[in-house]
Length: 255
Image (cartoon, rainbow, N blue to C red; front, side):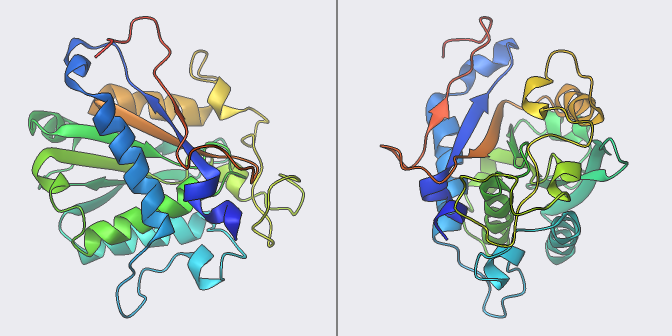
């Protein structure tokens, strides 16, 4: 189904913070990471035994992953490889733990150890609007590709913080009408706001939601160089497969 194909339906929003070392991060890295996440879902390569198929793939893209599906996927990925570490970084308004996979050659996935590794730290987030399902599925597929040995060079230089399901409460409020103009999944999708009715993409200043406070703490502890926030269009066609916006904060370094 076209809407679940991130090459035609998803876009990344790239962000950085004004710490001086960010000036070493190039737009090429950010664009390349976003493209890799989205194109992974266009041409996935699951293991022969299909052990890590997402719910979307198992249902021929008629359904999207539930919160339990994502947690199970990340936990099994961590059990399958020493380079994947499963943890959580906070809680939703309704008390769901926010799952996070720390991926890279770091024996200790703690924030202090990740920062001390000297590697580029990249935060990948999906599902801030729970009806926009593509990023959530694409991040699971990317994790599967990493388990299969693809993108091996990333392990030399990067640590990935993979957070596929940021608006977990909204994800569980599945109806067929949450995004009426979106072409699928036909089994329904979650809602745009969180359980409080807040648009989490508008809560980075006041931090009124538990989710926003949780991700703010994650940024304060892991201090990522690059953040990629994955969104989905309403199934519309665009001139480019990957659309993105630059960092908009006036203190963001130009480089």
